[in-house]
Length: 160
Image (tube, rainbow, N blue to C red; front, side, top):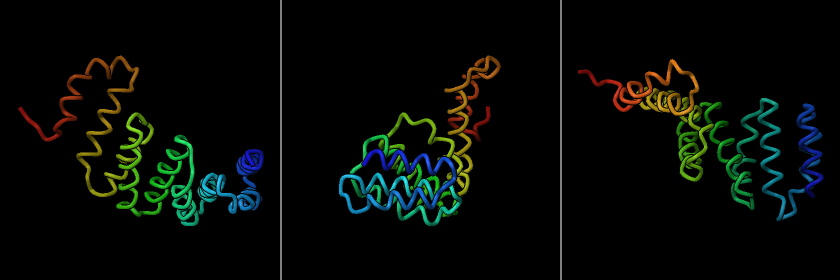
């Protein structure tokens, strides 16, 4: 069964989306692989630019047996897909769930910040991005101002 998933991934990488999904559909009746197949089908639709079709497959994958890495991928993929479709409230729910379950996943934070921005929560989005910047940069110029940037990130409206 793992070989089928690997073959489907290779087909997806070659933009042979329908073939990839057809191969994965053979696993949808196998309780040990159905969630994994749905996750791969969701990615196939996302990669093809058919995000709306991906949503149901992400949701189906989350209701089944996934490894921790696959669960992260499904949560993050669903949140990102909802955001790209303009379903910002649903996206926020899944971004926050992803961050709660995987708090060290820094790659989620920029997308979460974009979602906050989309919801009009500009101050939170900017603060999050500033903190992400100072915690990940290797730029000496930014590091020199790390303390000041972090202080402002706590309260962007603060004046002295």
